[in-house]
Amino acid sequence: MKKTLLLISLLTIYNLNINAQQCLNSGFCTNITNQHQYPTGTFSTTCSTWTTVNAYMNADNFTLFNVTAGNTYEWSYCESHQGVSTAWDAQLTLSDNSSGTNLCFSDNFCGVNANAPYLSWTATFTGVVKLLTSLNNCLNNSGAPYNNLVWRMANGTPSALITGVDVSSYEGNINWANVKNAGYKFGFAKATEGVSITDSYFINNQVNGAAAGLPMGAYHFARPENNSATAEANYFLSVASAYIHSCNLPPVLDVENPPTGPSLQTFFTSAQLTTWIQTWCTTVQNATGIAPIIYIGPSNAAYLNSSINTYGLWIDDYNSNPNNAPANIGVWTTWEFKQYSWTGTVPGISGAGGIDMDVFNGDTVAFKALLGCNSTGMVQHSSEINFQIYPNPAKSVITIENISLDNYEEGLISIYTIHGQLLVQKNLEGHKTKIDIIDFTEGMYILAVKTEKGMKVKKFIKE
Image (cartoon, rainbow, N blue to C red):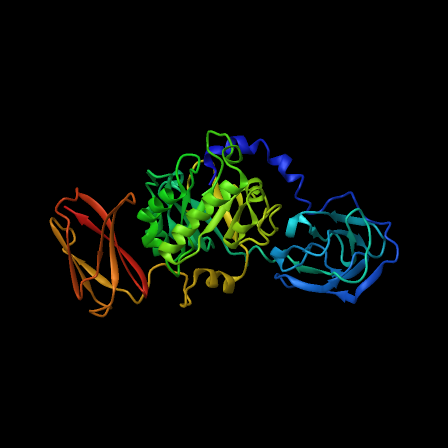
């Protein structure tokens, strides 16, 4: 989502990476006395999902793990991986159990108040490794409170990851069928910005992405330095409301520093910015019944009041590995999406400067739960809704005739320009609904029918 800031941001990539702490080659804790093996035994896993080692870990416990050369393994206390870091500030030291050679170290990185380590290591040998947990500054402790350590074998996870893209008019026309066939599972499309800008490709992306079988989401680029939260929320709803429903991704508020500066933290106190975001989210949720997600960078995520973390987090963690937990999630304790790259390459998308790449924090079951869809598919349009538009092309009046709906079923008809401007909203009128289009200019339009069963979108032409 940061096309305008890409050149500036690339200059700081290397500085940001030094905080990743996936496998540091210094800082090892080797001076802890009274080390205890816990749990006993040697762990083995080929599972790509996070598995609990033990929920009663102390800082002087070490655990043994079987590893195979070439496989990538991950260990973490982060809440985003089902670990627990709330009790005390942990560190991890990984070593070769046979030779004692230190391999990796990880300190504060993620979790509550960033008090959890995360370690990723690709095995250089087949054998047993020792993972030692320590307290901050290489200290030990004993007894309650405890932390929860989790681990997994991660080299098999890329194919299992639920990845997607976020796009705007920068990408132009997209072949969404190619995107889906390449293995991507979802798409977010920019809908609006401020109180006057509608993305010219929003409707095309929503309709064609859904037609390809991808759940789609709409996002709004916030300009809180210029407008009230209520005004921006209402403008977003006027364009995107027809695409906010179950079986689709939740609406998103894109919170970024103004493209021309200065930062939002210059304009607002943390309380003021939190209130602005809260008001926008509440307005959209009250209108749609669906809680929005907040897209935000690490600095601003840490600047907000913790009350905002009741809304889902889409964290900007660019130039990172999609398998890894975000480096900093601010006042949130977990995350739903991570934007891990701004420079990806995706079949079907030819936007200049690379594509924004995203990953969902969960498996297929969790993803379907987020969509709130009872069906087994991940398609925006409901197969239970069918209607005809005629004549098509039309000159003065179109008729929407229900085919699959009951005559008395309640529903809403919305007509948009191809650029996303809402022109007409009207309730279904029994079996047939007529709409006057005499004043429409010639061209193509989008018509959406939304009922409690879902939504279906079709196109028609005004002659």
